Image (cartoon, rainbow, N blue to C red):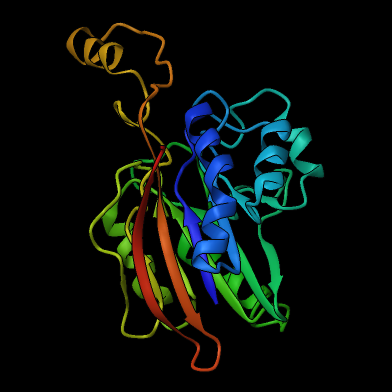
Length: 262
């Protein structure tokens, strides 16, 4: 099974690149599943129902979210009707939206879930380790899925690495998002789980984490509040491509990929 996980889509530049290339990438790489984090897709913060439907219509199979899940007004109602969008699983149970998804391709069922980290992060959430355990029990353990894919949306690399080792041999992949900077540690762990601390962002790299450079520098210099518009230069799609062998229940490859806008 071949999977592509696309890192944080930032604003219109990121959305446009995904829409333009995702179909070609599916054919070129013979992908069974394409999953994308889109928590920054709406003007750099949050998601809307309209944008979610556009990304799904372009060929993304499932959308995950992070700590900006509720940034767009009214999305707490819209998410209820988006069957292929899931919120972080360790948010309070009273929050709307699905806490995981199950996709199917060629008879193979892949469960997908996101957990938020707790180190240096704002939202008050349940333990990501115990939540990931619960996701595995409720999907693979219950016979509802053949394998589990886990995204950890977190700041601390230590927390991401620890979750990777915690789930090694139980999850298809543990892939990190949130920091927007791709890390050079994509690998298959000894138990067969694909891992990467951060798959990077999909958006403008001539920027500071996707935002226009000048106001961010000025904010660091004087501390005054400013509007951080989404930048537009050097747009790239960043993610991780994973191959998984259902017969051995092990990944055979985990590769960081970058696709530049033409």
